[in-house]
Amino acid sequence: MTTPGGAFAFACDWGVVADPCCPGWEEAEPAERERASKLAVFLLWAATGRQYGRCEVTIRPCRRGCTAFTEVRGVWQGNRWTPLLQDGQWFNIECGCNQHRCSCTEVCEIELPGWLPEPVRVHVDGQDVPLVQFRVDDGRRLVWEANPDGACFPLCQDLSKPLGQPGTWAVTYKHGLPVPPGGEEIAGELACELLKACTPGMADQCRLPDNVKRVTRENVEYEFDAAASGDFGVFSINQWVKAVNPYGLVAPPQIYSPDVVSPVVTTWP
Image (tube, rainbow, N blue to C red; front, side, top):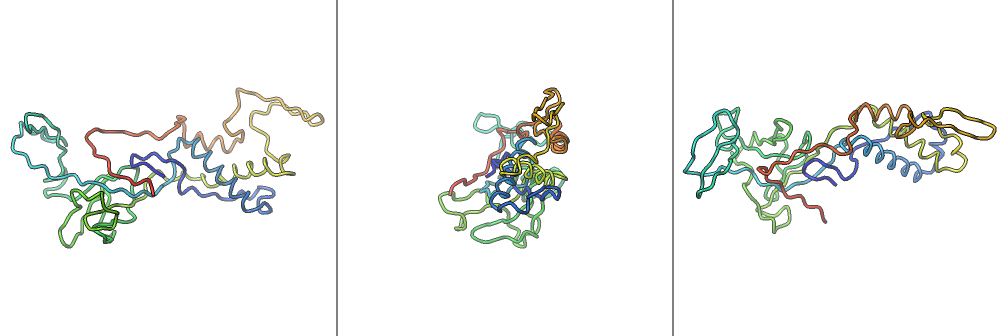
């Protein structure tokens, strides 16, 4: 599940490539491999700031409308915001309806919250609109550029009706940062260690943690160096996590604006 602001509740689209050097991986039960893979992906996703993986979400948005106003006290040239005096109160109206910042004509567009949105389906009044009619600008604006009828996204919709009925519309899209290179291989390496740790007869094959300073084989005695300890205790895994999350983020950064109307996201059923 995802939130429209870009935060994910779990990892999406993060595959696992089996470690070719993992003893007993192919001999293990499929359920055991699946469990180790899911746990490895979740741990890596959390360790890298919960920011990688592209999830699919369906939103029921409202289009930014063309505001009709009669009393404008000044226009800020070159700025996206126009001050509007209406009923004795000042409001900030975002430009881009009657004119676009880079266009001489009106542009039909909506905001898609999240990172690098990729439309999967546009559903208006019970009909699917071909994706060839759309493009994405600036990594967040869905533009309807080739509508043969010249129509645009509806300004509003009837949320009392289920999606697919007349008067309803929605956009399904993927968003999020792709898993960095090597992420699927590192997930396979971690899954191997998790599998060995919980499989009888394989626990003694687990790789020694990076912070092992001394080992006494006869008495099975280990001495650890706490200053050199890592999150996972495996050099390659720790180095990959540090490379893709150098500042130790625990959650993806997000920006909220009171001027942006959030779309409706159905979370159940």
